[in-house]
Length: 362
Ligand code: IPM
Ligand code: MN
Image (cartoon, rainbow, N blue to C red; front, side, top):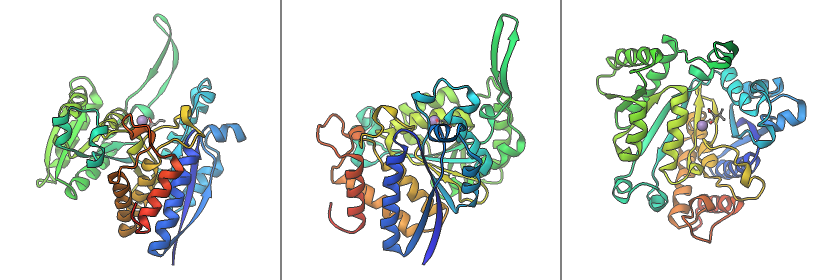
């Protein structure tokens, strides 16, 4: 039997609950498909600050690097909001991305037919559906550029710097084209080339690489327009490729038009593809520990892990189908209940998904 070593970064807020759900689903699907997992938890974020005074302990970095793949819940919460930037829980996320070299962040946003009425878009727009893959650059740009405080002309000032090298742009753009080739063969590159020098370099390189992919249709779009087009007609997008910060913002927007941010998984990959898998939502401190969170984004992140990290396509598809069936049967968590008063808890939704996996009718 194949055994995979998975590092678990439960993190803060709802993190532990949703990671627990994904672990249960992985165990169930593993049994069915003859693969097993060894899960090893490591501290990250606020939980790590509380335990040892720093958000990303060395042991966590080493554990993740030694794992076959990593599953992360979420980090952060009001308890740690007052801390200086370099020891905030979020810093751990940036640290682990950098340490593992995870320059590619894949964030799929598709509208589940069963959730059309949770979609906040006008009915005729939702009716067209959408299936977008956001390819977000994850280890560069303003997130990692020079930053600081200084005495400016008008006293105290702060600055952050957007910086991109040719190498960083080339490799993420290539990922986007390769991804598009397996989908509907269209890449939209999103930038702010009317203002930013980094965007002008991005756009130039995007066009250079595009010449190597004549079978893929391309478009450039300014980020402000893209924010508008996402709600005006999301069906026009197939693959979106964009910088770290624009990808952060646009992926939240894309998630909300799917009905809930609680639905969106992600994969963060390096060249080795094994990577780190996490829901795109945050730690939701307001509902933490209440068994209310939607576990689907994390469960689908586990499905992405099976596919991308382990090439276990059948097991991955099985999870996606199980989630589909549960949604189609009308089961909801609070965030996608669309005002209905009957909905499932985190653990009940997980049970339903596992029941569906086992072939039982849900
Ligand atoms: C995300 C999050 C992170 C990001 C934060 C928590 C650092 O918003 O994964 O989208 O901005 O990348
Ligand atoms: Mn974000």
